[in-house]
Length: 298
Image 1 (cartoon, rainbow, N blue to C red):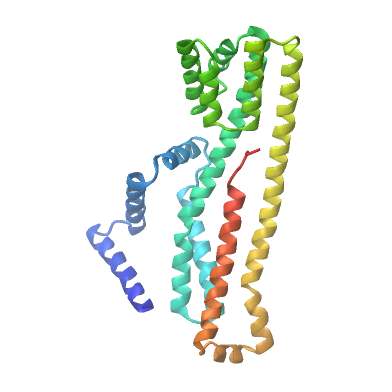
Image 2: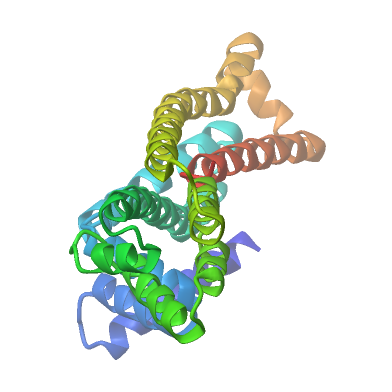
């Protein structure tokens, strides 16, 4: 089975080189993968990746190549250390490289969610500041829209809110629209306060808005502190995860390399070793998903 996989990979490599008349095969594969991505990737992720590029945080080709080499070397080295089999080492190296697009997806989502959270913070803070001057929620939105400090997609949604407010003669639907699209606590709480001020009035709206602004600052500080904690935890988590893979070295030290190789001749020992690798890999991937997701969620 493994030999067939190798022959299949070699055949793909050879055919790609033949049909491209000596063109750099790496560039050919990059082109094909990009075309497939543009055709089949979800629209939402295309927008996320586009914004990641605009923010200058998309990996360069060299960084992706370095990641491919690192994953292949580490995965292949660990597999060889477990089985002393070059074919299995190559197979695990290919599988590890195949996970790079998924990790890139998670990273782009993290960058995008951090950007959205910063924009939401800017939106709420500046609407409050504008309201202190205009005493009108819609006029406050217009001031934030024209300030030049908000970017798409938030900017487009602010324009939609303004249009909905003028069309309906009330801010209820526009607030419901924005709350549904950006279900952050600070957004819902601020909008609820504006609804109360607009419909019921407030004896001291300035003080209420100042308290709201202080709450937003405290909330943002807590989110950023959580991000710092996650980063520190992430470093320790990766160290611990890699250490789990290398526990096989302790077993080989205790048994002796020759005795360990004799054990590899038993099918159930190999099955157990495969299970250890798969479980440890699942543990690492799950941890990576936790690290990258829900950034800025309160």
